[in-house]
Image 1 (tube, one colour):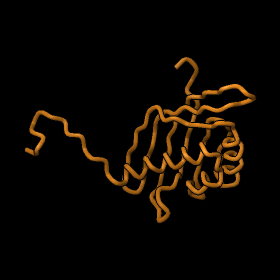
Image 2: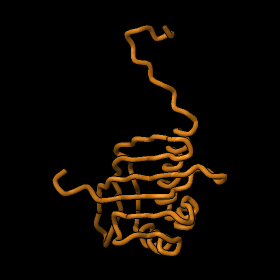
Image 3: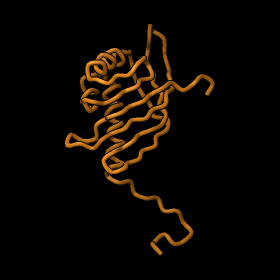
Length: 142
């Protein structure tokens, strides 16, 4: 028996990769919140596929992603709070899934939008890069 005995539930220490994948999401959140679309772009693989809560269509090339993030990060007082986070790592693939809430001002009014998300990362020489992202608004009444 380990030091925990037979009747306890030991909490496993997070691996370095799990910590790094969580940090990759925090880096994305910080870049969004400071209104830095160019910094946001460095977090994506060139061939990333992105489905966004606030834009129609698939953003599957850097030019379309940059256009979107320039528009999105221009929102006044843009902030994002993680409401629930699940992080998993499978070899060189990492996933952050959960719920987040964006807040910002639009035409002087406070806006709050709850959304679901999945970020898929690939471990590269440049670190954990986003290769797939899906974000969708939480349905009304939930």
